[in-house]
Image (cartoon, rainbow, N blue to C red; front, side, top):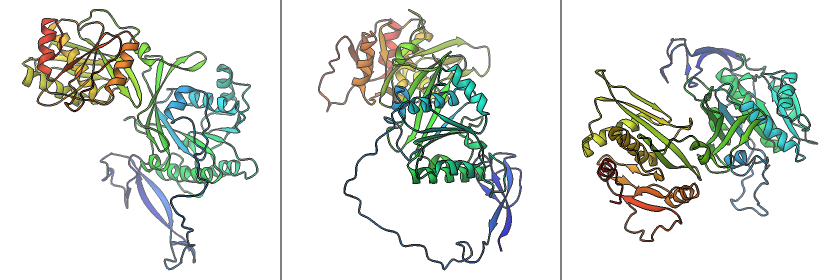
Length: 468
């Protein structure tokens, strides 16, 4: 006979405790333990009650097979989405898309599934949060009612698996919106709990891979910005995408953080319009469209997101502070890295910034994480502190070390080409290693190589930037 056992599972990290303690011992979160009932000691002959039972022998094959070829991808025709997924959706792949509420996840996936349906692909859109009429209203607003998409409103995984497991006519793509609303009737816990989310995703993924169906899960996020549910959910799927954006701006960024079939850290840029999400072919031009001329505290970063060069404006404000502990406010960048740059400017370059309020903003709402932004941040801080604007047609990129040296970064030629295409004439970048003697020859832009941060401080203070 099966025996019921009560355990307490943390809804934040998935840790299991034998009793309720209020605080999760694994992650330290409070009031996240939820009681769940599991079945142990199954019937005679089951795997749990018969440890001596042997499984079926596996058919082992060699690494190199005959007739092996790459699977054809489902190309949606939305270039920004196809870029992020590595060139299209792979049959049998499972993707997880997370983002803040109302950011546009359902809108994006409805557009993708309708585009694919127009290419004679059988596509299912299963919503666990909205009724069928609500999905139709969104499709009508987006002008997609003529797309041959099959929609349903369901939350039972048993019913969804039955719809997918059709050997005669399996679907090519299935959207599950969202995985937190799905439930399996054999699991005695509420929808959205760790056990339900993990088991539901595992069962849908299993049948999707069996039939070669591409499935896209929509995932809710916590207040910290992480996808809700167990961390194992991100390990189970083949790709994890985050849909980011600032509600105060009209554009959205789709970012890859995991992809088994393509590069990671790719981004796709969309603009939210009345007709839905419109792809932005040149995001650098959009991010720099409202940049002011000859303003102190502003510098342009030639960044790199995945394989795409992106130019963004970094803004800094250094103001006198009347507080005993001056404020440090950062939007779109790492606050710990800002503290490091400020310490290097004081210790290595002689700038006194400890008594000032520091505000740093990456304009446009985009978030930058690469170390190449160090030099642009330092240029914006120095410009605001001295009151002297940097040259209007200059871009900056380079990593700053603790001794003040400027270190090389990846793909400098790609950054320079993008800068030249947008009309910039100067680029301040790290000095290349001695082994790379080939000169940089990008038409329309001159590269100024710097070796130490104090050279940039001296040049900006004198308002005459030159090479080190």
